[in-house]
Image (tube, rainbow, N blue to C red; front, side):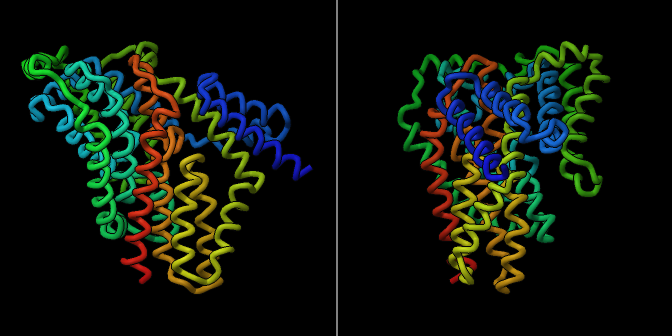
Length: 425
Protein backbone atom coordinates (compact mmCIF):
# COMPACT_ATOMS: atom_id res chain seq x y z
CA UNK A 1 0.00 0.00 0.00
CA UNK A 2 2.89 2.35 0.79
CA UNK A 3 4.34 1.94 -2.69
CA UNK A 4 0.91 2.46 -4.27
CA UNK A 5 0.54 5.71 -2.36
CA UNK A 6 3.92 6.95 -3.52
CA UNK A 7 3.07 6.08 -7.14
CA UNK A 8 -0.37 7.70 -6.87
CA UNK A 9 1.05 10.93 -5.42
CA UNK A 10 3.72 11.17 -8.14
CA UNK A 11 1.21 10.42 -10.93
CA UNK A 12 -1.28 13.01 -9.62
CA UNK A 13 1.44 15.64 -9.27
CA UNK A 14 2.80 14.99 -12.78
CA UNK A 15 -0.73 15.01 -14.25
CA UNK A 16 -1.55 18.34 -12.60
CA UNK A 17 1.80 19.72 -13.72
CA UNK A 18 1.11 18.58 -17.27
CA UNK A 19 -2.25 20.38 -17.24
CA UNK A 20 -0.57 23.54 -15.95
CA UNK A 21 2.03 23.42 -18.72
CA UNK A 22 -0.53 22.63 -21.42
CA UNK A 23 -2.84 25.49 -20.36
CA UNK A 24 -5.79 23.16 -21.09
CA UNK A 25 -7.44 24.39 -17.89
CA UNK A 26 -6.57 27.26 -15.58
CA UNK A 27 -3.55 26.51 -13.39
CA UNK A 28 -5.56 27.22 -10.21
CA UNK A 29 -8.15 24.61 -11.18
CA UNK A 30 -5.44 22.07 -12.08
CA UNK A 31 -3.74 22.50 -8.71
CA UNK A 32 -7.01 22.35 -6.75
CA UNK A 33 -8.18 19.22 -8.59
CA UNK A 34 -4.87 17.51 -7.85
CA UNK A 35 -5.08 18.42 -4.16
CA UNK A 36 -8.72 17.32 -3.86
CA UNK A 37 -7.98 14.01 -5.60
CA UNK A 38 -5.29 13.25 -3.01
CA UNK A 39 -7.83 13.79 -0.22
CA UNK A 40 -10.65 11.86 -1.93
CA UNK A 41 -8.35 8.86 -2.52
CA UNK A 42 -7.47 8.84 1.18
CA UNK A 43 -3.78 9.56 0.62
CA UNK A 44 -4.21 12.71 2.68
CA UNK A 45 -6.74 13.40 5.42
CA UNK A 46 -8.22 16.86 5.17
CA UNK A 47 -6.60 18.06 8.39
CA UNK A 48 -3.23 16.69 7.32
CA UNK A 49 -3.56 18.37 3.92
CA UNK A 50 -4.39 21.69 5.57
CA UNK A 51 -1.34 21.30 7.83
CA UNK A 52 0.92 21.34 4.75
CA UNK A 53 -0.44 24.67 3.50
CA UNK A 54 2.02 27.49 4.09
CA UNK A 55 -0.32 30.06 5.60
CA UNK A 56 2.57 32.45 6.13
CA UNK A 57 2.97 32.76 2.36
CA UNK A 58 -0.79 32.97 1.78
CA UNK A 59 -1.20 35.57 4.53
CA UNK A 60 1.64 37.64 3.07
CA UNK A 61 0.02 37.50 -0.37
CA UNK A 62 -3.47 38.31 0.90
CA UNK A 63 -2.34 41.17 3.12
CA UNK A 64 -0.15 42.83 0.50
CA UNK A 65 -2.77 42.36 -2.22
CA UNK A 66 -5.25 44.25 -0.04
CA UNK A 67 -2.71 47.01 0.66
CA UNK A 68 -1.79 47.33 -3.01
CA UNK A 69 -5.45 47.27 -4.07
CA UNK A 70 -6.38 50.13 -1.72
CA UNK A 71 -3.24 52.12 -2.50
CA UNK A 72 -3.79 51.84 -6.26
CA UNK A 73 -6.96 53.94 -5.96
CA UNK A 74 -4.87 56.94 -4.98
CA UNK A 75 -3.08 57.02 -8.35
CA UNK A 76 0.32 56.27 -6.78
CA UNK A 77 1.30 53.64 -9.33
CA UNK A 78 0.38 55.90 -12.27
CA UNK A 79 2.43 58.67 -10.62
CA UNK A 80 5.48 56.40 -10.29
CA UNK A 81 5.05 55.17 -13.85
CA UNK A 82 5.04 58.74 -15.20
CA UNK A 83 8.07 59.55 -13.04
CA UNK A 84 9.96 56.49 -14.32
CA UNK A 85 9.19 57.43 -17.95
CA UNK A 86 10.65 60.90 -17.34
CA UNK A 87 13.79 59.56 -15.63
CA UNK A 88 14.43 57.19 -18.56
CA UNK A 89 13.48 59.93 -21.08
CA UNK A 90 10.97 57.55 -22.64
CA UNK A 91 13.61 55.04 -23.77
CA UNK A 92 12.04 51.56 -23.37
CA UNK A 93 15.19 49.62 -22.53
CA UNK A 94 16.34 52.26 -20.03
CA UNK A 95 12.95 51.86 -18.37
CA UNK A 96 13.33 48.09 -18.33
CA UNK A 97 16.78 48.48 -16.78
CA UNK A 98 15.53 50.96 -14.17
CA UNK A 99 12.59 48.78 -13.16
CA UNK A 100 14.66 45.57 -13.09
CA UNK A 101 17.42 47.04 -10.92
CA UNK A 102 14.85 48.56 -8.58
CA UNK A 103 13.11 45.19 -8.33
CA UNK A 104 16.35 43.38 -7.49
CA UNK A 105 17.33 45.93 -4.83
CA UNK A 106 13.93 46.05 -3.13
CA UNK A 107 13.66 42.24 -3.25
CA UNK A 108 16.90 42.00 -1.28
CA UNK A 109 15.68 44.44 1.38
CA UNK A 110 12.08 43.20 1.69
CA UNK A 111 11.09 39.98 -0.03
CA UNK A 112 10.48 39.20 -3.67
CA UNK A 113 6.72 38.56 -3.41
CA UNK A 114 6.03 41.91 -1.75
CA UNK A 115 8.25 43.63 -4.31
CA UNK A 116 6.35 42.08 -7.21
CA UNK A 117 3.02 43.10 -5.69
CA UNK A 118 4.22 46.71 -5.44
CA UNK A 119 6.05 47.07 -8.78
CA UNK A 120 4.03 45.07 -11.31
CA UNK A 121 1.11 47.57 -11.34
CA UNK A 122 3.65 50.35 -11.98
CA UNK A 123 5.21 48.32 -14.78
CA UNK A 124 1.90 47.76 -16.54
CA UNK A 125 1.17 51.51 -16.35
CA UNK A 126 4.60 52.28 -17.83
CA UNK A 127 4.05 49.90 -20.75
CA UNK A 128 0.60 51.33 -21.42
CA UNK A 129 1.96 54.91 -21.37
CA UNK A 130 4.47 53.94 -24.07
CA UNK A 131 1.94 51.77 -25.94
CA UNK A 132 4.26 48.76 -25.62
CA UNK A 133 3.47 45.13 -24.72
CA UNK A 134 4.36 44.70 -21.01
CA UNK A 135 5.84 41.21 -21.26
CA UNK A 136 9.56 42.09 -21.51
CA UNK A 137 9.16 44.39 -18.50
CA UNK A 138 7.22 41.76 -16.52
CA UNK A 139 9.56 38.87 -17.33
CA UNK A 140 12.66 40.90 -16.48
CA UNK A 141 11.12 41.97 -13.16
CA UNK A 142 10.19 38.41 -12.18
CA UNK A 143 13.72 37.24 -12.93
CA UNK A 144 15.29 40.21 -11.13
CA UNK A 145 13.10 39.64 -8.05
CA UNK A 146 14.36 36.07 -7.63
CA UNK A 147 17.97 37.07 -8.26
CA UNK A 148 17.83 39.99 -5.83
CA UNK A 149 15.99 37.92 -3.22
CA UNK A 150 18.84 35.39 -3.22
CA UNK A 151 21.32 37.97 -1.91
CA UNK A 152 20.07 38.37 1.65
CA UNK A 153 18.66 36.49 4.60
CA UNK A 154 15.17 37.99 4.21
CA UNK A 155 14.91 38.17 0.41
CA UNK A 156 13.54 34.66 -0.18
CA UNK A 157 11.98 32.10 2.24
CA UNK A 158 14.65 29.39 1.61
CA UNK A 159 17.33 31.81 2.84
CA UNK A 160 15.39 32.44 6.05
CA UNK A 161 15.19 28.68 6.66
CA UNK A 162 18.88 28.14 5.86
CA UNK A 163 19.95 31.07 8.04
CA UNK A 164 17.96 29.73 10.98
CA UNK A 165 19.30 26.18 10.61
CA UNK A 166 22.94 27.17 10.06
CA UNK A 167 23.14 30.19 12.36
CA UNK A 168 23.90 32.56 9.46
CA UNK A 169 23.16 36.29 9.73
CA UNK A 170 21.97 38.96 7.29
CA UNK A 171 25.56 40.13 6.81
CA UNK A 172 26.80 36.54 6.25
CA UNK A 173 24.42 36.23 3.30
CA UNK A 174 25.16 39.68 1.91
CA UNK A 175 28.96 39.29 2.15
CA UNK A 176 29.07 35.77 0.70
CA UNK A 177 26.27 35.87 -1.87
CA UNK A 178 26.22 39.60 -2.70
CA UNK A 179 29.20 39.49 -5.12
CA UNK A 180 27.90 36.60 -7.20
CA UNK A 181 24.36 38.02 -7.23
CA UNK A 182 25.74 41.33 -8.52
CA UNK A 183 27.57 39.48 -11.30
CA UNK A 184 24.41 37.55 -12.20
CA UNK A 185 22.34 40.74 -12.33
CA UNK A 186 24.83 42.29 -14.76
CA UNK A 187 24.74 39.17 -16.95
CA UNK A 188 20.93 39.25 -16.81
CA UNK A 189 20.93 42.85 -18.04
CA UNK A 190 23.09 41.84 -21.00
CA UNK A 191 20.73 38.91 -21.65
CA UNK A 192 17.73 41.27 -21.62
CA UNK A 193 19.49 43.58 -24.06
CA UNK A 194 20.24 40.75 -26.49
CA UNK A 195 16.68 39.49 -26.18
CA UNK A 196 14.70 42.74 -26.30
CA UNK A 197 16.97 45.80 -26.31
CA UNK A 198 17.17 46.39 -30.04
CA UNK A 199 13.52 45.46 -30.61
CA UNK A 200 12.01 47.77 -27.96
CA UNK A 201 11.39 50.90 -29.97
CA UNK A 202 8.86 53.69 -29.73
CA UNK A 203 8.50 56.52 -32.20
CA UNK A 204 9.21 60.12 -31.27
CA UNK A 205 5.52 60.97 -30.91
CA UNK A 206 4.87 58.11 -28.47
CA UNK A 207 7.90 59.06 -26.38
CA UNK A 208 6.99 62.74 -26.23
CA UNK A 209 3.38 61.90 -25.40
CA UNK A 210 4.47 59.66 -22.51
CA UNK A 211 6.97 62.22 -21.22
CA UNK A 212 4.32 64.95 -21.21
CA UNK A 213 2.40 63.06 -18.51
CA UNK A 214 2.84 65.16 -15.39
CA UNK A 215 3.44 62.78 -12.46
CA UNK A 216 1.56 64.97 -9.96
CA UNK A 217 -1.52 65.01 -12.20
CA UNK A 218 -1.80 61.23 -11.90
CA UNK A 219 -2.73 61.44 -8.21
CA UNK A 220 -6.48 61.06 -7.84
CA UNK A 221 -6.79 61.16 -4.04
CA UNK A 222 -4.06 62.91 -2.04
CA UNK A 223 -5.58 62.02 1.33
CA UNK A 224 -5.68 58.32 0.44
CA UNK A 225 -2.11 58.60 -0.88
CA UNK A 226 -0.82 60.01 2.44
CA UNK A 227 -2.64 57.33 4.42
CA UNK A 228 -1.39 54.56 2.14
CA UNK A 229 2.22 55.76 2.24
CA UNK A 230 2.09 55.96 6.04
CA UNK A 231 0.91 52.36 6.32
CA UNK A 232 3.32 51.15 3.62
CA UNK A 233 6.16 52.80 5.51
CA UNK A 234 5.15 51.01 8.72
CA UNK A 235 4.95 47.69 6.85
CA UNK A 236 8.43 48.15 5.33
CA UNK A 237 9.84 49.11 8.74
CA UNK A 238 8.25 46.04 10.31
CA UNK A 239 9.73 43.80 7.59
CA UNK A 240 13.20 45.24 8.24
CA UNK A 241 12.78 44.72 12.01
CA UNK A 242 11.08 41.35 11.60
CA UNK A 243 13.56 39.42 13.73
CA UNK A 244 13.53 42.01 16.49
CA UNK A 245 9.73 42.10 16.55
CA UNK A 246 9.43 38.27 16.35
CA UNK A 247 6.62 38.59 13.81
CA UNK A 248 5.98 36.47 10.73
CA UNK A 249 5.62 38.13 7.34
CA UNK A 250 1.92 37.21 7.18
CA UNK A 251 1.23 38.92 10.51
CA UNK A 252 2.91 42.12 9.31
CA UNK A 253 1.11 42.14 5.95
CA UNK A 254 -2.33 41.32 7.35
CA UNK A 255 -1.82 43.78 10.21
CA UNK A 256 -0.89 46.48 7.70
CA UNK A 257 -3.94 45.66 5.57
CA UNK A 258 -6.23 45.85 8.62
CA UNK A 259 -4.72 49.20 9.66
CA UNK A 260 -5.15 50.62 6.13
CA UNK A 261 -8.77 49.44 6.00
CA UNK A 262 -9.44 51.22 9.31
CA UNK A 263 -7.71 54.54 8.58
CA UNK A 264 -9.17 54.83 5.05
CA UNK A 265 -12.68 53.63 6.05
CA UNK A 266 -12.60 51.21 3.11
CA UNK A 267 -15.40 48.65 2.84
CA UNK A 268 -13.71 45.23 3.38
CA UNK A 269 -16.01 43.57 0.82
CA UNK A 270 -14.97 46.15 -1.75
CA UNK A 271 -11.28 45.75 -0.85
CA UNK A 272 -11.47 41.97 -1.22
CA UNK A 273 -12.43 42.42 -4.87
CA UNK A 274 -8.81 43.50 -5.54
CA UNK A 275 -7.37 40.18 -4.29
CA UNK A 276 -5.99 37.80 -6.94
CA UNK A 277 -8.08 34.85 -5.77
CA UNK A 278 -6.97 32.46 -8.56
CA UNK A 279 -3.37 32.97 -7.36
CA UNK A 280 -4.36 32.21 -3.75
CA UNK A 281 -6.24 29.07 -4.84
CA UNK A 282 -3.33 27.93 -7.00
CA UNK A 283 -0.98 28.11 -4.02
CA UNK A 284 -3.47 26.21 -1.85
CA UNK A 285 -3.50 23.32 -4.29
CA UNK A 286 0.24 23.43 -4.93
CA UNK A 287 1.12 23.35 -1.22
CA UNK A 288 -1.09 20.28 -0.70
CA UNK A 289 0.38 18.40 -3.68
CA UNK A 290 3.99 19.17 -2.72
CA UNK A 291 3.10 18.33 0.89
CA UNK A 292 1.96 14.91 -0.32
CA UNK A 293 5.29 14.39 -2.09
CA UNK A 294 7.00 15.33 1.16
CA UNK A 295 4.75 13.07 3.28
CA UNK A 296 5.38 9.92 1.23
CA UNK A 297 9.11 10.63 1.32
CA UNK A 298 9.55 11.32 -2.40
CA UNK A 299 11.40 14.62 -1.94
CA UNK A 300 13.61 13.31 0.88
CA UNK A 301 14.42 10.13 -1.07
CA UNK A 302 15.40 12.13 -4.13
CA UNK A 303 17.53 14.52 -2.09
CA UNK A 304 19.12 11.69 -0.09
CA UNK A 305 20.02 9.72 -3.22
CA UNK A 306 21.59 12.82 -4.73
CA UNK A 307 23.72 13.45 -1.65
CA UNK A 308 24.80 9.81 -1.31
CA UNK A 309 26.34 9.74 -4.78
CA UNK A 310 28.64 12.62 -3.89
CA UNK A 311 30.69 10.55 -1.46
CA UNK A 312 33.14 12.53 0.69
CA UNK A 313 34.08 15.06 -1.99
CA UNK A 314 33.23 18.68 -1.03
CA UNK A 315 33.60 19.73 -4.67
CA UNK A 316 31.18 17.08 -5.93
CA UNK A 317 28.76 17.59 -3.00
CA UNK A 318 28.62 21.36 -3.53
CA UNK A 319 28.10 21.06 -7.30
CA UNK A 320 25.45 18.36 -6.89
CA UNK A 321 23.47 20.34 -4.31
CA UNK A 322 23.65 23.51 -6.43
CA UNK A 323 22.46 21.95 -9.68
CA UNK A 324 19.98 19.55 -8.12
CA UNK A 325 18.44 22.34 -6.02
CA UNK A 326 18.16 24.60 -9.07
CA UNK A 327 16.48 22.01 -11.28
CA UNK A 328 14.18 20.75 -8.51
CA UNK A 329 13.19 24.29 -7.49
CA UNK A 330 12.22 25.07 -11.08
CA UNK A 331 9.46 22.47 -10.89
CA UNK A 332 8.69 22.19 -7.16
CA UNK A 333 7.96 24.71 -4.46
CA UNK A 334 11.40 25.54 -3.05
CA UNK A 335 10.16 25.88 0.55
CA UNK A 336 9.43 22.16 1.30
CA UNK A 337 12.39 21.19 -0.87
CA UNK A 338 14.71 23.33 1.25
CA UNK A 339 13.13 21.92 4.40
CA UNK A 340 13.98 18.39 3.20
CA UNK A 341 17.55 19.31 2.24
CA UNK A 342 18.58 21.05 5.48
CA UNK A 343 18.70 17.96 7.75
CA UNK A 344 20.38 15.95 4.97
CA UNK A 345 23.16 18.52 4.64
CA UNK A 346 23.63 18.47 8.42
CA UNK A 347 23.92 14.66 8.28
CA UNK A 348 26.55 14.91 5.53
CA UNK A 349 28.59 17.21 7.73
CA UNK A 350 28.30 14.87 10.70
CA UNK A 351 29.23 11.76 8.72
CA UNK A 352 32.03 13.19 6.57
CA UNK A 353 33.35 16.16 8.55
CA UNK A 354 33.42 18.30 5.39
CA UNK A 355 32.92 22.08 5.81
CA UNK A 356 29.24 22.96 5.47
CA UNK A 357 29.34 26.62 4.46
CA UNK A 358 29.83 25.89 0.72
CA UNK A 359 26.91 23.45 0.92
CA UNK A 360 24.65 26.06 2.54
CA UNK A 361 25.54 28.64 -0.10
CA UNK A 362 24.97 26.05 -2.85
CA UNK A 363 21.52 25.27 -1.45
CA UNK A 364 20.62 28.96 -1.13
CA UNK A 365 21.74 29.82 -4.66
CA UNK A 366 20.19 26.73 -6.20
CA UNK A 367 16.82 27.04 -4.44
CA UNK A 368 16.44 30.80 -5.00
CA UNK A 369 17.85 31.14 -8.52
CA UNK A 370 16.24 27.89 -9.64
CA UNK A 371 12.88 29.50 -9.00
CA UNK A 372 13.42 31.53 -12.17
CA UNK A 373 13.33 28.41 -14.31
CA UNK A 374 9.57 28.05 -14.86
CA UNK A 375 6.37 29.94 -14.17
CA UNK A 376 5.61 27.90 -11.04
CA UNK A 377 9.20 27.84 -9.76
CA UNK A 378 8.68 30.64 -7.22
CA UNK A 379 5.85 32.50 -5.50
CA UNK A 380 6.88 35.77 -7.16
CA UNK A 381 6.39 34.26 -10.63
CA UNK A 382 2.82 33.12 -10.02
CA UNK A 383 1.96 36.37 -8.25
CA UNK A 384 3.15 38.44 -11.22
CA UNK A 385 1.27 36.20 -13.65
CA UNK A 386 -1.93 36.63 -11.63
CA UNK A 387 -1.68 40.43 -11.57
CA UNK A 388 -0.89 40.54 -15.30
CA UNK A 389 -3.86 38.31 -16.12
CA UNK A 390 -6.18 40.47 -14.03
CA UNK A 391 -5.03 43.53 -15.97
CA UNK A 392 -5.63 41.90 -19.34
CA UNK A 393 -2.09 40.68 -20.09
CA UNK A 394 -2.05 36.91 -19.51
CA UNK A 395 1.01 34.86 -20.41
CA UNK A 396 1.54 31.13 -20.55
CA UNK A 397 3.87 28.71 -18.82
CA UNK A 398 5.71 28.13 -22.10
CA UNK A 399 6.11 31.83 -22.95
CA UNK A 400 7.76 32.57 -19.62
CA UNK A 401 9.86 29.41 -19.43
CA UNK A 402 11.27 29.91 -22.94
CA UNK A 403 12.72 33.24 -21.78
CA UNK A 404 13.71 32.40 -18.21
CA UNK A 405 15.03 28.83 -18.24
CA UNK A 406 18.21 29.52 -20.27
CA UNK A 407 19.08 32.47 -18.03
CA UNK A 408 18.45 30.31 -14.96
CA UNK A 409 20.95 27.75 -16.23
CA UNK A 410 23.46 30.51 -16.96
CA UNK A 411 23.05 31.95 -13.45
CA UNK A 412 23.69 28.52 -11.91
CA UNK A 413 26.78 28.10 -14.09
CA UNK A 414 28.10 31.44 -12.76
CA UNK A 415 27.26 30.34 -9.20
CA UNK A 416 29.10 27.06 -9.78
CA UNK A 417 32.25 28.92 -10.85
CA UNK A 418 31.93 31.32 -7.90
CA UNK A 419 31.60 28.51 -5.35
CA UNK A 420 34.45 26.53 -6.88
CA UNK A 421 36.98 29.35 -7.11
CA UNK A 422 35.81 31.13 -3.96
CA UNK A 423 35.38 28.19 -1.60
CA UNK A 424 36.62 24.88 -2.94
CA UNK A 425 39.74 25.33 -5.01
